[in-house]
Length: 505
Image: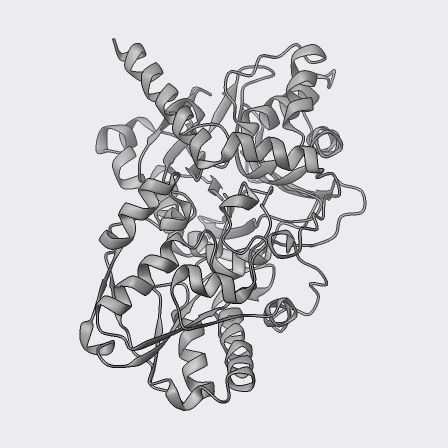
């Protein structure tokens, strides 16, 4: 789950891209990168492991010259955390093309073979984003004329759609031509378009979420449609075309539950409003199913921060006091998107601390957005008990997550998911709560559709095991489980570290 941004302007874009990436930092904390095109038609690139504020120093910003550029924050779901797999990626043929990508391809193995044998291109990393870049660049290379017009760009995107499968929201820059944004035919990952007027000219910006537009001074225009490509020349001309067959919007439901910022609007949905609706529906379910227990609940406490709006609405429905029982250290990353189990475990205690007076001798209803591996939930429950809670009730704003995600969220193996093949009672016992309740899937999807009824379907594969791209097999799931479980990640991180140490020598 990465964050991407791209700007075509009449003035330097480095500071605007930097500011936008800081607003998208919640989407990836592993690495960051910015690429610009300078006055001599050369790419200027800086990328490294770490947070945006750590990767880009004053000297780097000075070198990132140019009026067009793209940025990326990485949350790794494939490959390793080696800096070599940080984005943007670049190829020099044709013209010079660079790309950033949010999502995950489900046919990477066959794509790599096709790139090598048919296109005679070399892919130097395990990143599916580099594969995607080479597929797109190869289709550009097959266009006979030297100068590309918008129809040529759309042709290359159409051919790319036919080759690749999975989830992808992409931005690409082509030296001497312009920037193109495109989104997979299901619109699984978000991508928005913004614009502003400067000195009588229109400047354009693309980003994963609208909050990135806000900080750079761009007004939201619309979402990039599923299967659509929007091409902006470096002179500021904009062209758009539908480039996929049978495109239909099925956004990832987990964007609204957890990943996106509450102040974003994606596919016509206010994330904040959707979460308020989630709290309304979950509160009603609690009131109905726990009617005999309601008198025992003394206080409603959210697990910071995604669930705060949900918990507040639950407290209103139940007519129970709402309290902030946890203080969050804002300088520790989101534990769910940390790459290894040991790192997730050690970070929870550094991330949260209890206000003991809100727990002591009370029966507490804890509210969280979801329960994934259960690691964080168990530790939070232990902290609440240590602070003096008598009974702990737990409510999840999302249904049970029982299946791996293959579209860019790090839920790679079912055996790492606490809800897989377990009942609600078994899950409650494992995380140590007295009573546990989950949101119904229909209630979750209705909470989002309440803001935009035009959305008829979602990617809900982590709850249902039904993958909307229709190409996910048991063999594929077993393959990614072996590649992406915590043990495999640990070995890849060790190999990547050894390689980088060797290179430094």
